[in-house]
Length: 184
Image (cartoon, rainbow, N blue to C red):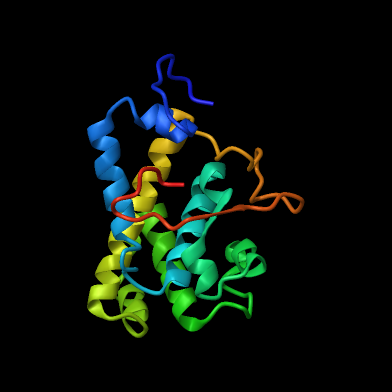
């Protein structure tokens, strides 16, 4: 629950808080949606790095959801739940490992991203895909930090810690598009 005393009408807590600045919210939704329409790289990689960024930030509101596009591309809940074990879990491909290592360095200390980290990703992604991944990481990282700071919780029905608990199941939501009215 947000600590802001004022909110606006909206379907979700996210809509009610971010709706205080509708022009910024519209731009944020568009930026987020451009990651997926069309996907800037493999949707499974996008979802795995989004989830890893959420784990690093301890952002339950993002851990509580899964995007349809990644599920349609083959990402199952077991692999998504194992993202913290990406370095050693055999379910993760070399491409996924390279992108997850890159994502971790991006979030923890962007100055620590090395040429070797970039080259590891470039072995699997084209330069436009790498640029798209960087844009996605910037969006995920910034948006999650803002959600945490403003106290915007998980979507209705997710429950506290739904995605991070062995009991809870994440909510499958439509993939954001640049013209979507909400992010989930």
